[in-house]
Length: 81
Image (cartoon, rainbow, N blue to C red; front, side):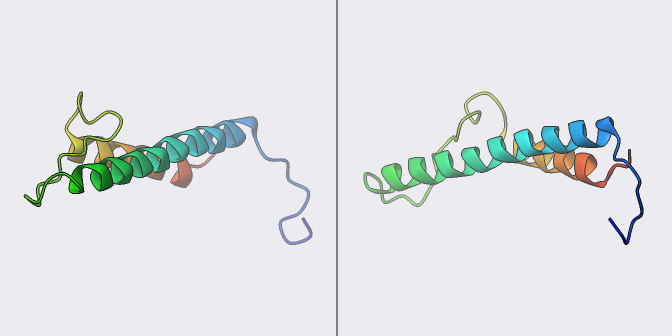
């Protein structure tokens, strides 16, 4: 507080931080589910093809979905209030 002075943070900044936390939590959960699915599938197949769809992989292209989550998080964290 001594370095930055007595400036109050805006509510929009806190809301953006909360939204980023929600998106990042879901993003991490998606990675955990995908790893668990991959480990389960790897026990039954030796093809080397990753068939683990994750949470939303059955509905969306995984590359597009992952890129979208990363873009949303970048905008939320870099944007100014």
